[in-house]
Image (cartoon, rainbow, N blue to C red):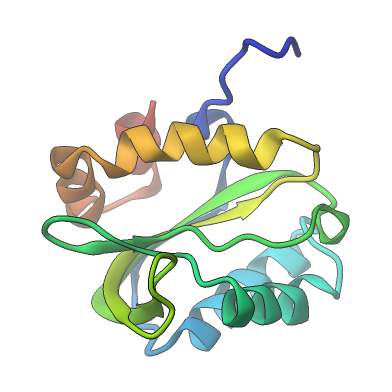
Length: 156
């Protein structure tokens, strides 16, 4: 892969990790839910869950947008066996601490959990996600999606 190829979110979607209509009540519940599937499917090591929780506590990933919040949690490459971007669309907003102001929170219904194991990939993926996140209509569609295929089409 050459350096000028932008990573596409859609190339990293894994159907078991597109979670719609979830009922998580906290970031911990969300991380547990993603980890349960990712670990069972062989995507992550047993260090993924403690490390993503620790990283979120130290470096929060909530982003406050004009009309909502989103979150992009991620952790160390060495906890990832097979790369993925998990998409979680929760029914009710979960409070994530804000990246720009860790003393504040933002309500998050859509979270992208990044499981990347290549150096530099994280930054490129964050740039790709920024394009998606800054488009309110795309977020509306993600929140309204009813199945995994919808998510894949929206993010393509």
